[in-house]
Length: 328
Image 1 (spheres, rainbow, N blue to C red):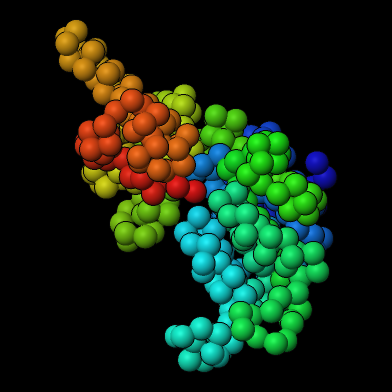
Image 2: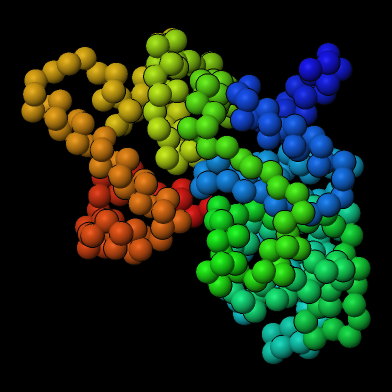
């Protein structure tokens, strides 16, 4: 890599808050640099917790629209009945409570980037609305008479295989081809294990600044161990573990891993205690894995695990696992 390109690469990562050096991470950032200057729809793909919104923000702030708004849309949190209103706004009198004109998120993102997250959760009707919008980037507020041009760059994200969705019938083929212009793959922590110590150190630095305390750190051995943990919840899970370690740590002392990760570093003890620690660690990892598979739906995760939902919820509570960490 040429020096000028290397400096551009490092500067882009610093501005965007991206941390890493692994080959998979570098491939992702190279894609962002290449696509940032081109005003084209970008499809961001990655597992739950990998940081897809952060990558979308990086794409925005690396490009010429960086001085304008970045507006996220969480499709998974929008009921079908509100989708078009939220996106396109409405005119006065469009429905009973519409006492005035209201701008939607597309209008609010004028000049900037509209980030559509969890696009795989859209209903067939909402997919049709999205396709119509993406065809010429024009929209009409609900109850309005005029059509407007949308001056936005569209970035979408998903943790599902949309091509499989087309084959299985839950995702429109024409919308898939409209979105599938250029892709950015966000690697899992398993794909970029060498970045885990760097990420943990960056997280600790941010936490020290946030809480206004002296910097805290893991020792080298603990940092190395962090790189060997599977991290099924990816960056989000790592961030939670680092945060707990930071809060539980003492000034001037190396930080220790909390919860089930600490069992890995503990000195050997009697058989019963060692077995209990390992089973506890297994249970926590298993809960996270089924929650990730169910995209945070506790009822579905309990069904996958063959557990009664109330019992499954108690198990989550015992391990400090939050449903929201797997909903993205």
